[in-house]
Image 1: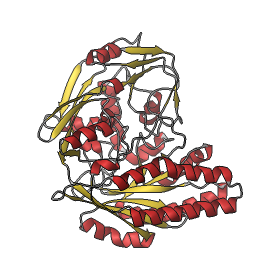
Image 2: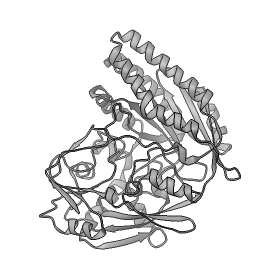
Image 3: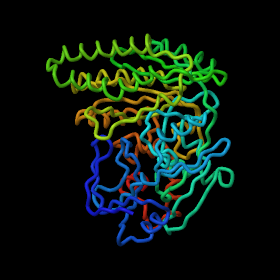
Length: 453
């Protein structure tokens, strides 16, 4: 097992900096037991880390503690007819490739390919949900093996202890170090994809139609134009997937070219009026390209996964809040008003479109953001900077005031009052369960101490 003392580590995009007392890179379960049971060599808090793609600061305290880099434990262990078991550090992208070779796919093929399976298993994720299915990867995790705060090796499964699985699916490493994950999979199905440009009122009108026809629904929000581009997906088990090329163009655009153009406009056009016009023109071009070009009849679902480079030259940053579907369109109108007012008051505009997902009710994880019913999200996006972070503080206030539900790992700058308002009694239940499983606070860092206290 490799270990380093007093290191400085940045997350994937460089926006968060950690200075753990020790960084350990275990290669076996025995290494994990050694880390947990030796608080002198490996001081608290002991926090797991994978690709560090979370937008919130949740991989350890500002200084001190032990960061456990799980990426060396990255073997795909075995398959059954409808499950695969992997080590904690296997990435979503690598798993998808292995499944594709066997004619299989995950139930949730979410966009970020860097994320590790242990993170998927115990943290919130998102994707548009097909009717009758869930939108979070952890809902399809049916087994876990982990090391407890006492150094014991334990296993839980959905079949034997569904209530414990419900707790673990959004436990964020606070119950133990997960080293093995079993997740359900299914045969590969061709994916039909279409895009439509709509006004907000048209989207409100057509949403029930899209749902009735069995589509999974994602959308791009252009708040300053009050327009959306709706992405409709449908699965076709009777068709063979054949196309992937347009996904590659789309992935390259959102990973590199889109943020690069947006950042160039902000850097090089100093006049506010002309800068706004340039962004509006670029947004218009985006909408036209998606509607005209991004159409597939039988594409590979695996092809939508994007592997983001570490320390990218240009950033694609986001935050997420979910809202009840019944209230969503009124809130969306207010979100557009909020963006306009914030622009007039500060001069800051998000230079990338906001994104959103239609997600069915999901009670498989205690901190599910659709616990009370179907939800729809609003995820602002930007190439970053201090003004972006100030915007997120104001956006958090807006969402909390409008009954939104955040994600601990994908909503930065949360306060305890915001999470208390969103989760209510669930927060107390989780805090009690955490204290019972880790009374000496071996895994508890300051971020979660503040939110759970």
